Length: 406
Picture: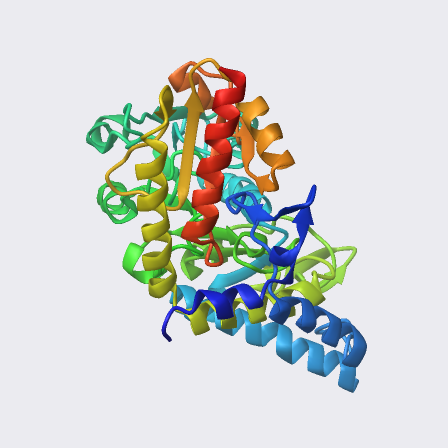
């Protein structure tokens, strides 16, 4: 479809709200995107028309909910081009997906003295679970660094990988630097040495087309709430052969085949990793956000956001004392910066008073802050509904704040 920004914005009624009497401008999309009417109406429709607990009953409501729930699994398979829908596991979010793999993969494949490589630019959620696993298994964490432009030093990967390396875990796109990492190259290097790769795609699937078969990553995770969908829903993709070998992450209902006090047998994929009643309503409503992304076209969306990025960077460069963090050649819809002599929190607080929502602080990426020797940054991040006019209003407000505080 032709990119019609007015039509797209009409799907998001919250954008018409006022904040402190000012038009609401939302540049905190890397934390969570706003929800369109299609998703809000889908959640309401499910509760009003056919809610029932899935997979476990022989009545109409449960059958209808089960069919729609599983249809979304099929949608996700097609959205990321997985080989089979059994490779799509529903979780609570990217964080739980990381924890699932860190536990279950760790139990199966990681032994005392083995190594996990983590990139220096990771979100805490893609660091801490691996640290916990390493402590539990008496394994070692090694770090793949990034340079001053915010690009991973891929040339160092060969020397980091040893015969004890089991897995590399890396963000597809950095939530602070906006860097789009060369996942295909990382996977190629890793697989050549029989090392698996986990990709945190929380900042990627809403900004560019992701094909897990083309990337050849062994695991890929993302969240619905960063993809115009409901909270409390995550996706874990894993290659079937690995998932089949891994032990369950949690025990309970649905993930079992048979239970007795003498022993339990586990369900087949993907249910082996989906213990208990899932977030039924939100998973089904997530399908509406995937429909929207198909309607808009991820390639069209990426082109629009790239134009916004180029305009924002060019305007921000005109502000004296402003420093960017993350200037990779290949980057996405995140801009992090500081202005000399002004605390990032003060900028964020005053922008809020002018109706503009940004994120300030360490963005759950302390190692990135430590790399640059800073406490935090101001971060703006774009989505399908943002406009050049909003950026112009933001720049005007920022200049006003700089004049006030300097």
